[in-house]
Image 1: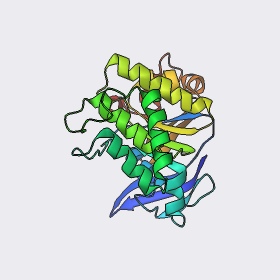
Image 2: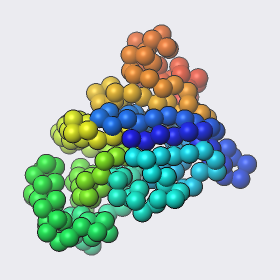
Image 3: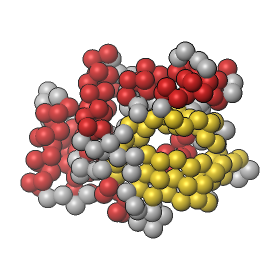
Image 4: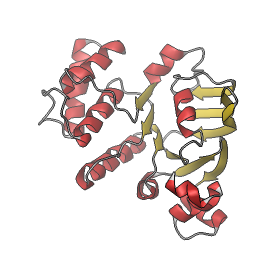
Length: 244
């Protein structure tokens, strides 16, 4: 579970995040949406302790990222939009390296990798170097690397960018599986079909503030719109937001 209270972050004169508060509950998929420049990426980076907040509180499974950074890394799994794979290493070596960083034994790492290979259908490329991987293969390795230590809370930043239809469907099944086993999932995406298919709750950030927070149906009713895309544009208050 994630609980954010009155979070602020500025860069010089630019106030990127302005007093936002929200919760991400266990056993739910929470969509975090916003146009570029809204403060969404800054918020995500504060959640996984890459940036310290100027003001406010973050609790992830009861832990404070500012005080418990190492403990947070054990309870949190992050799939960043950059993926950041080591291209001279095989998929297995990428995953095993992160398992070692989390303090897992060699036998634990081997067991976890075999389970993830089956779940994510990685058998065809697990022993290959990741340089030259397709986008779908890169995403699978990034997910496996983030999940090797069995984190309770998972943050997925634009996980389906560049994926084909079959890879996207497989990714959605995996994310729904995380929800079914009680994980707390944050999904940051611009794809409204993905939001509609996966998210129990949706948080929309605009100009550093919470513009809306609720279920898909609640946002449709609040905006008096027929689609989530139209509701998103209405709730951030600008037609340009859809293009951002």
